[in-house]
Length: 362
Image (cartoon, rainbow, N blue to C red; front, side, top):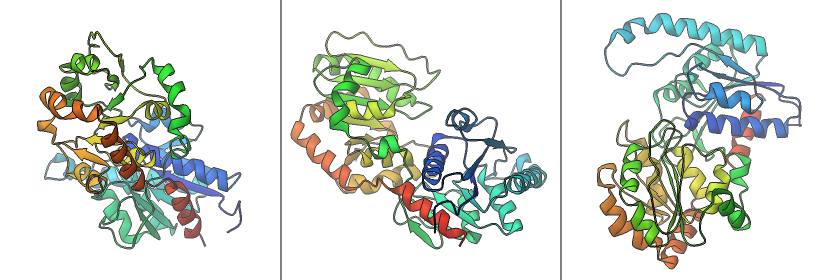
């Protein structure tokens, strides 16, 4: 396919960073490969995409948010009317943008776009981020032209493993080159640096455990960069040794990764894929709710020796003192974990998915 053959594409993904980040990574790659291509993102007014997509310079078309109930409720009774309205709105977006292909990343936004594209005969490409697929992508995959998945073993018909589309600043990150600059940027020390992040919304379990063990880490010479999540009311602990830096949100995640030697995080698909792409060892604490996809997301890298997994209930200040702190002071162990993490990483998920999207219109 020659550059520029792709003229217009609609990308549907919203709600959380897990859907929005790969959508924007694909948008960036498609515009690099196809100068002049019109990219229209579809989302809702209440999702993270309402702020992030316009900031990245892409137009955002809104459709009604239509949750798919998992058990009998009044939402199930009202579903047909809500979905019909959302599908009509999605059809109008596809028509006005003259879309050649529709790409969905799952979540509330994708189902109406899949249904509208199918009715109009527009090729559909599905990308599933999690090891266990969500309901929207299970529906979309039934009539998609191509299906891409992040992790081997994801159960969707005709799935091809492409990995996760990552932002170029993450996929091309040279941690060693940026290490000193990154540590100065955050005001961190020269010894071991631990990054703690619960994702864009934060994680109360992590916040509580580290608030109670901050002084132990600081006294041992471990600097901490802790992203608490917005509105969590986390009070920065007073420490006497290495710095303990608290932020609500990390706009420069590339610098946070460059500064860190090890990470404690949830096991969202984007998080797992970013950490392995940049070769960071991690302690994964899967979210204890949902359908168990976070545990599945991290199982592969943990089996390969690129990280550890700890149950949410077991992640306490005592576990940090007894298990995590000795690991943070063991350079050889961290090096082994980091090498295994890097071996499990995929850095070209955006290019693989872009090729699939371009191929869908042939």
